[in-house]
Image (cartoon, rainbow, N blue to C red):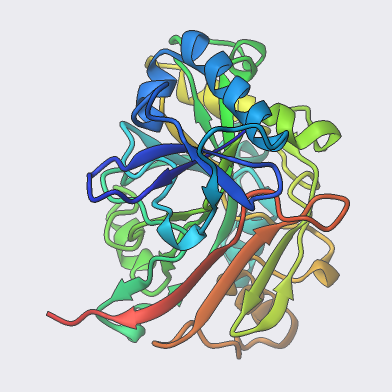
Length: 328
């Protein structure tokens, strides 16, 4: 099924079920007021949402309305936890090689994950609002999952059974703030502003054969200022699948229902697939010519991130954002 959160003026929005073709929706407040409420009691709530989803797709729902992504908040407008991995090790390898840094063997053996902000998550069409272009504004397209309760010490197989939803993300990065932050030895903070998410989150079964081995085996499409710049396959070159990422997160803690875990920038070794973030393109330019020529985003730039099924239909809806200057 497909779920969305509509902006009703409340912090956590209003849960809606969205038709498979993304054309109609139905408020689900008679079942659960918010997505977090549904996740908290998934075994009881999910079958009821599935029944409404079936009625909506069959044209039998009582009060359907036209689905408008402009009304969408992030599926989870705020989450108890958001962790972001770097499952596509090719991305890390390129960025490190461009600056002459060694690639530790452990990066291929154990996932890299950082703790991100989760109190302010953006809807699919919310602007990217920042104070300075000089910070090096970059998009980064990702796939993310939302978990159920996963106990400490869970194996990847156990974690796999607790992956409730899948969605897309734009993990905006401020590349020129990253080096001084990491040099302090304490990780990302200011260099990782609010992340945006797709209009809908879907249950893994909605992806059909494209969901296997804890991965989504479909390409992403990235359009920057109207120009296609990347269509990397999310199932290719993903060294650590989602169940492994969640199990790694659970090594020393319980992970609770509603935790968001991102894949990290989707990256393929095949450079002809384009790029998911500007930093990767600049790294390739540096490796090949000794100089990065592609500039980071400017105020007024737009980014669109979407994933299509094998029939060319949008699965999650599109993330469409414009970079705007902070005005106070």
